[in-house]
Every structure is written in structure tokens, then in C-alpha cells.
Image (cartoon, rainbow, N blue to C red; front, side, top):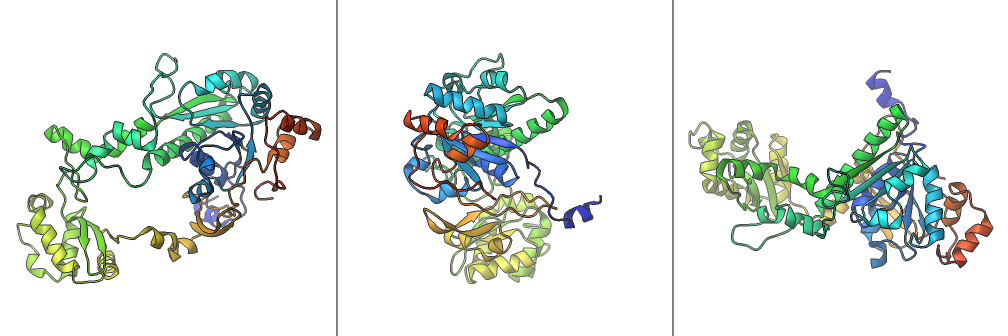
Amino acid sequence: MTDDVNTKQHGRPLPLDGVTVLDLGQIYQGPYAGFLMAMSGARVIKVEPRIGEGLRVRGPSVAMAMINSNKESICLDLKHPDGLATFKTLATKADVVLMNFAPGVPERLGVDFETLSELNPQLIVAHAAGFGVRELDGSVNTSTIPAMDITVQAHMGSMMITGNEGDPPMKAGPTFIDFLGGTHLYGAITTALFERERTGVGRSVEISMADAAYFTLATSLNQWHATGSTLRTGNRHAGMSLAPYNVYRCADGYVAVITAANRHWRSMVEVMGRQDLAGDARFDDASERGRRIEEVDAIVEAWSSGLPRDEVARKLQEAHVPAAAVRVVDEVARDERQHERRALQWVDHPELGEVPLPHSPIRWHGSDLVELDPSPLLGAHNDIVLREVGGLDVAEIVRLEEAGVITPKPFEPRQRPGT
């Protein structure tokens, strides 16, 4: 089948259709990997403590809704013998268990790879942690450095290349470390599933947030390698070697511009109506512009400051110069083009009302785009999952409720997502 035919054919099952995932993830990193799997067709069962995972206990939030769409929710007390036994029963029927606990926690809970693989040799157990799960000799990493997004940013140097010289260390605004880790966790799981198709054997796989974060330092490491130090350049190029490369003031906001090639500068000269700069030896080469960065920025801003933000961005984009208006979050959430593409969708969420929720960034050509099912209430699928996957009967489920292993639900359970 050609790629063209494959792209036009709809109704193909999603790639992970038939895969069952037990998602022990917390906050962002683990749950995001689970979200990507759910949107790729897997049955993802979110397993939480009886009071809910760390993000849920903060109260209903858009963040919780964003990365838990199309999952089922059960609550289990893994510290209770019956709760652990129930989880192990589920693991015998699952393909993947994912988590982002601190190193050593799975072993203490009894949900580590060695324990679970004895019950299900085909199981993939995927674990993301701040600084890796195991040492090279196989022993558990005993690092006690707190591995939250902000602490990894601090530990891995991101804060000291963000902001301007002389200012205190500054974290990046978005929680990019957590989602970088979650993306790598998804890649690791799907790669392990591919291997299992060939070998029939499961595997333990881990992700280090710190290891993934190192790659984001690429441009600053160029500067470090050349000079022995790094710069804090604000919105300018980390190596101060590209210009224009900055955020420029407009009449009603700001626009971000980068000239990654000399042709971009030549196009900018045309757009700005500064033909007098065409062929000027002081600016015609990237290295020369880098040496005159202040002068270059002044030239660009003298033009941009007299025009509306969107007009500046449009003129540059039409000339194939990398540029974008600097938008506020409200504009991003309401982006009509993103909603037309269904990358963002308005969803009537049972706890939040109408909110814009994202679909997966991954598009599977040939398969219909799965409908977004709002993130489930805690334990909403206890009965369904424990019956369908765990093989428990009603009497056993009631016994677990009475024993405090699962939380009785004050609401009717939903159907499985997509049913």
C-alpha cells in the first residue's frame, strides 16, 4: 500500500489498539506518557491512591484534565495486602505498567519489575525518575536530590542560562522538564513493545529526567566549548552569534524574530524597506551582524515599533522569515486554527465546565481522530476494571470497599472511554 493510499484510508485501528496500560503516574511526567498512549489507542487504566494522586488532591484543575483524557480511573491502596494483590492480578493481564516514583519506591511497594515480571514475563515496566532508576551494576539509585521540574532545572543548569546577566537564577516558565521526561517515557515504552513483538519477552525500561534535560543545553554548550563559560542572554541567541535574534517591541506588543540564514536577513531588509542595507558589508554576513548585535536590534526595532504586532509577524512570515507574534495564554487557548485542526477542543468537563483541552500532538494517518473523553473522576471505573480486567465479582469488590482498599463511589461509574 502506498503512503498516499495509506493516508487517505480512514477507520484503521490506532497503533496501540489492544494494549492495556496500568498508569501509576503522578503529576505531569508519568500521566503525560499515559495520555499519549491512550490517544494512540491503548486502554489506559489510571491507578491512584484512595485519596487520589498528587495533582488530583490539589483540586479540580485544567492541568489534571489535560493529561488524563481517555483514561479509566481506579483507586487502590497498594500498601494494603489486598490492594497489592489486586494490582498484581491486574498486572498479569496488562501489557505495560508505567510510573514516575522516586527510585526505590516500587521495590518498597512491591510493584517493581522483578516482582511483576515473575507474574507476567511479557510485561513492560517503565519508570521515569529524576536521575535514573538504577546504577550500571543494577543496584537502585539512591540519589535523594528532589526531582521535580524546578529542581531538575536547577541541577542541570537551565536556570543559569535563562534570563539576563546579573539577575538571580530564573526557571523557564513552562514545566518543560516534566513533559520532556514524559515524552521520552512514551518513546521507551513503545520501543519496548516493538521489541516484545519480536521476542515475546517484556523488559524493564527507565528514563532519567536529567539525562533528557542535558540535550536542551545544546546551544549553550557550543558557547561553553568555545569560551569555557556560558552567557545569560535573555531573548537573544545563547551564543550571541545570530542577529536579528530577539523579541522586538511593536506598537501594541512584541514579535519574536530569528534570522537563521543570511537569506532571512536579506528578506528582512526588503520587508523593512531598508534597501540601503542590502549588500552592506557590515551586515551581510551572520558573523558581522553578531558583532554588531546592538546596532542590528536597533535597526529592527526602529521599524517594528511603528507597526502593530500582528502586521509585523505577517509581513515577515510572508517573506519566509521565522517570526511570530508574542501571544498571551488566552490567545493560545482560543486559537481558531488549532481548534479547526482539533489539536485543541472545547470539552464540557464534569468538574470544570467548558475548557479547551489538547489532543495528542501525534497524528496517525489512516486512523480517525479519537474523540476526547474528559478525565475521569477518582475511582469512576473501579467496578468495570476490576470485573473486566481483574476478573473480580461484585461480592469481592464490595469486600475490598469494606476493607478500605478501594473507595466506595458516591456516583455512578462511567462507561469505558469510547464506549
